Image 1 (cartoon, rainbow, N blue to C red):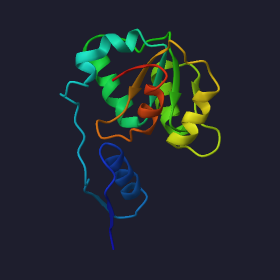
Image 2: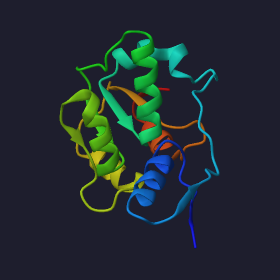
Image 3: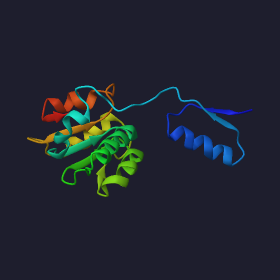
Length: 153
């Protein structure tokens, strides 16, 4: 019997490799492929906003991966000024590899609702916020914050 790993690349390949190395036969076949965006919302068209943000909210490792890919390709660094928030701890740990500063996350359940509760505890008036997420990402945070602050991306 073999295990079929459907996790997207490159995580899926890493898991398959690890399982095969410990004697558990596994194949990798991702059900999804991710590519950098070319839409009007793309970071390549709006990266200036990244550097003028007061707060950057990150929703996925993929958004970090593609943002970092764009920054490296253009010989740029992650901005150091903004406060960073992540949807959960694993996303924050992945981001920490690149920014080496405190990243705020929801304390209990890692989801949009608890991220919004966390953001309610800070003064966001006149703040510029950048949301790093997939184009089809959940819009709850964007829609809730849009009523209060200027949001980029």
